[in-house]
Amino acid sequence: MKRSIHPAVSCMALCVMITISSCKKGTNPGDEPQLNISYPIEVSRFDGNSAYPVVSKITYNDKNELVFFGDINGVYKEINAEGFNHILPNSVFLGMRSYLFQGGSIYDGHPTQISIDEFTKYPNGVVESRHLDDYYRAYNPDGLLASELLTGRTDSYSYDEKKNLKQILFVDNSGVGSSRLTVKSLDGNPSPYVAVKGYSNASYPHSSPMDYALAYCHNNPIQIIVEGNDPRVNTVWKVTDQHDFSYVYNENGYPTSVTIKTTYFNTSTPQVFTQTYVYKYK
Image 1 (spheres, rainbow, N blue to C red):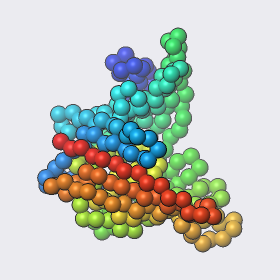
Image 2 (cartoon, rainbow, N blue to C red):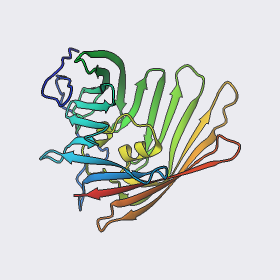
Image 3 (cartoon, rainbow, N blue to C red):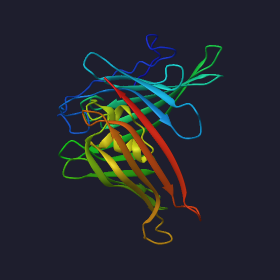
Image 4 (cartoon, helix red, strand yellow):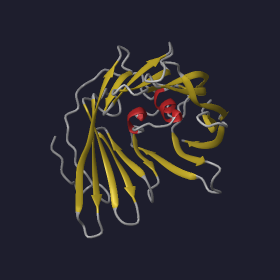
């Protein structure tokens, strides 16, 4: 896949040209019409360690497709149908990771490959680049993500009868261990990004349980647990962390405030941390 620096993208840019294949419409959050539609335009995260929240802005094009997420003066994403550029500035250089989705539109397709490249621009104008990785995806008959092959790991996804994420199994391909994330319960209200087409792709890569729930659940989780095992020791699944969610909703049923209590059990005494997210909508 040929790539070149493109002057039109702010700060430093990548021109990535691919042919988008025609795919059937899926059923991830954002892929189906909703009543009383709301689109988040700002999210503030309070983690208890600072008096000031981390605030991210969210903007859309005239089709209400996500085009920007983050802080224009900090870390942010520039998004289009082919993928996104993740801008990572610091005081010495400007960094960017480019995520190219192949095999379908990021908004309403079923991309089967994600190619990741990294670019670094130094004050003297020199730009360095390197290819980081390629990930591969497969989908179930409902058009939902079923599996993802990463370097050294395979992730398998399953869903409930309402097409909410039920469980993800993360398997280390070397056989040294695996973990699984299970959504134990959900409310009956719409997730903040349920109306945002392609959010599950644009929010990639996912790391926390909340990331996965926002990407692959139509409703909001009440409890998520994460378990692990090491087949070299035994095959018993052990809970490593538990995430409990509480909500305040607006008149349309969307969360305006989410408080997450996370309990980690991998120490002699369980450790508890709390975060709160506040949403504004248009």
